[in-house]
Every structure is written in C-alpha cells, then in structure tokens.
Image (cartoon, rainbow, N blue to C red; front, side, top):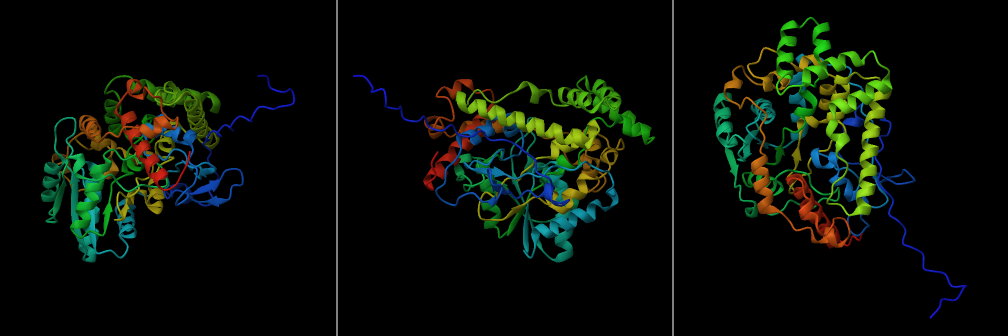
Length: 473
C-alpha cells in the first residue's frame, strides 16, 4: 500500500527542552544566602511554584542529579518540573571585612532565630566538630532562655571504626551538659522513607536514619531539630592562603599551613601557582584555576547510568554550571582563595525535613551566612591547634572550650563503609526511572560507586511520589 503524495507524516513529538544553569543578579545582599528554593516560569520569568498535585516532570532536569555537582554536593540541581527554573542569585566576592570576634554572638543569634518561640530543642550530633560547636552554642542559648535541650545521634561508625555516640557522650561530659542523648537504631528498615518533597529527590546520605532521628526527637518532645550543615563551607580555611599569610606576617601560621598543605604531596606547587596567577590575565588565571583546583569537574561529564538522550542534556546543564561559576568569579576578579570560597559555598541547599517536625541549619541562616562568608580568609586558619583538622577549622574550634581536641576525633569523619552498607540494605530498584527513559536498562552494570546507587534510589522514590500525586513525564 502506498501513501498518497498529499499525505503528511504525523509530527514528531517535541523534544524536551534541556535544563540550564544561570545565576540572576541579587536584588539585595542577603538574597544569595537564602536556601529556601524559589522558582520562575521558563521564558516569562514570572515567579512560580511546584505543583502540589498533577503537573509534568522533566526527565532532562532529573538527569542533572546524575552530574558531578548533583552527585557530590548538597544540591537540588535543576527544577524537576517542566517549564520551571530554579532561581539562584549570583554569589558576591568574599570581602574579608567581617569581625571574627563577633562569631559566637552572631551564631547564638542565628540559633535563636531558628528556634523562635519553641521551648524544646534537639541538636543532631555526629561526634564531629561542627555539630559539637552547634551543641555548645545551643546549650548556651537554652541555659540563658530556660529552654530544654536534647541531643540525638545517628551512631554511624566512621571509616576508622569510631562510634559517634561514644564521642558525643564524652563531649557532653566535657561541656558539663546533662541533657538526654538518644541513639537512632541503625537498621534502615526500622524506619520509613522521609516525606516526599516537590523540590526534587532527596540528597541526604542516610534518609531513613534521618527519618528515625526526627521521629525520636519528636517522640521525646522536641519541637525542632538543629543541624550543623554549612560550617565546612562557610568557616573552614580554603586553599591558596600562602601569599596572604606571608603578606600578613603570620610566619608561624604560614609554616604550619605549608606543612599541612604538603600532606599527600602536590599542594605546595598549587600554592605557588596561585601566587603567580595574580600576574596573569583573568582568562588565563581562570583556566589555570579550574584545571588545578577542580580537576575532577573537568574530567567527569555526566553519568553512564543515564539514557543517551538524557545524558546529552545533563552534560549541557553541567557545562552551564561550570561556565556560570567561572564567569561570576572572573567578573569579580577574585583570587584563587576567594574563588574557592565562592565555589564551595555556592550554590547550596539544605536537606528538607524528613517529617513534619521542623528542622533548621543555623550556620545557613542568611544573616549569619552572609557575615561568615565575609570573614577574613586568613582568620580561618591557625597554627596554634594540635592537629591539621582543627587548624583548618580554627573558627569552629574557637567556639568550643580549650582542650576539645582531646575529646573529638582529630580528623574529618568519613563514613564510606557505613554509607555503602546502608545503601546495600535500603536500595530501591529504579523500575520507573528505567521505564520512563531516564536510566538505561543495564544501569546496574554501569554504576561506578555508591553515590550513583543512592541517587538512582532517590530519583526512583521521587518519581513514584510524583506519579502518585498525578504527575506525568
């Protein structure tokens, strides 16, 4: 049978637009530091919000979760809804004008803003420096205002076998606190999945245990949970400080800093490159910075789990992300140390609450975050502490009493083995993600690491929740 000459073939389905990453000009100085997601309509730029029910989700946008920024940072990469864009305001240049001696008072004020009029406060404690500092500051607020305090811990062993609950019990004795301390049962199936969020798949590392922490805290009467997220990004010393420490005449700090930088080999050469880069033009300096400071971001391009068409557009989003970060830094004329501060802090998000119990991260309070971002870069490092971790996190360590180095682990806690074990037990088979054309059918054989398994599970749970609410691809 032949087709008549005048007949026309049915139109091909429209190709879904690729998501993009663009910074908007900040309307005020606090706008870049607001973590509450905001959206606009693609094309018109009008303010918009995710649909409560129904709506159309974007497979291309969900592909951004499988790029390097999505897999390795606390980030809702792109609005998961077709026709919506995430509004992100361009970061400022770190100016170094904030006063370090105001740090404790500023953080106490942020804690009070987070608590509001609530009378019973829980602090999520990990046995690490950031949550220890938050616990100490929150305890001061609670003593002064007559509030009740609770500590709650996911007792996830770090890669050296250290258990957080043991460390936190010792910390409570060190701080002279007698508040209750609850331990989350580590069996993932003991707890339900966290509540679904219209903002996109969750990026917390242990979501069911997060749910357990919130349920334990609520069961004990807590009205809010506080987290220590943000201290690393805002208060830790960046790299490339040698020239600044030398110019400031801080020779003791400089010697300690160079010794710390030499651990693992290579970094001292990068310090020298950073010092020489100031003599280059902005374009040459920016290119050298990216290949030196973020080599992984240049090597990795999307995930092999993605279907071919989705992968192409996810890589386009990743290119936009890197180009925008480079553009903003180059236009500001920043040094390499300032660029590191900008790129490790922005863009950032906070994990949404796991239940109806409110949760907050006082370090990411916009007023405090804006202050902390503009602290002098050299004030973030001190050679006076006994170990490299405390030296690089001098501002956080200063929030705790002298001698805390003998109580807390002398290193940044990593829980890669516990993380892998959790996802072996809690993994969700991404049936919908494969059926809808987001992931390849042979996704499992293409997995490189647990981060990809966790992301595939999170995206699958989000798709199920979205379709249960009437959404379509």
